[in-house]
Length: 212
Image 1: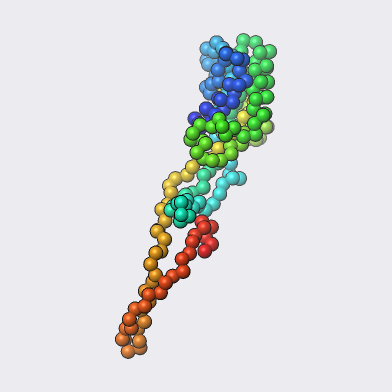
Image 2: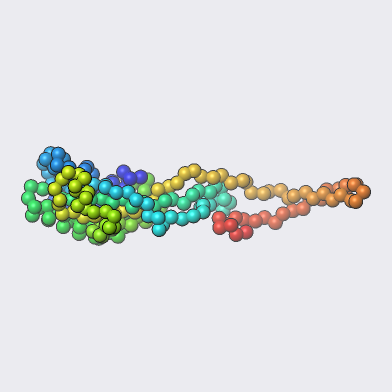
């Protein structure tokens, strides 16, 4: 699922590049990588993956057939925050600032990943994918520490966070609905059994919430 988010983000950021030039990459911006670049580049480095525990749900979803009967149950997805360190790379700082400004303007126009630009795997989730840019990271994360770990020099950057659901397996099949009535047999005190009489059960439908 992460690589699908990469592709959706790449599609957005391409609109910020100078027409006909530049590229969007997801490599670690180390010193060696910086020395090899030869074109205007937006680097969107995925540096952190954390579950958004505030969005965790309990219970299970009911999956129904065309007739409304519950076929199986599925655990709800778990939501994760994918954090990207977005930097601009050119031959001059002024050009880098211009490119970073264009990227910021492009991302600020979207509070969600545009549904019409999502890869098929993400579109199939039928969920809105929140996007935030330049929001201060938690105190547990320091951008300076990230650059120190990469062995590179501190550069202006944007913190881009996309929240995406990850499906949880497995699914659980349910028993088929009751189609026949129960049979009740009555036995007298002396042990003689009477003729069994069928007793029809009232049909109940499970709406997935436990209510009947």
